[in-house]
Image (cartoon, rainbow, N blue to C red):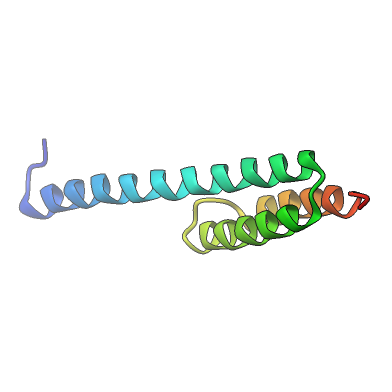
Length: 88
């Protein structure tokens, strides 16, 4: 338990921040899964839309400190490479 008013407030803020970060992290993971599913389906239009959504979610995650910028770049690069290999 917090000993001071400021420590109690910090604890409350940490709980709110954790909930927000958990939701953001979940959105990032969901967008990555959606992009992988679109790539697996072989539909170029769906893949392009899913990659665009994933890129914006991951960029927001980088800005908020949830994911390292190099990790985001690596994942985007690998998925983009797979998306470009789709033939249709």
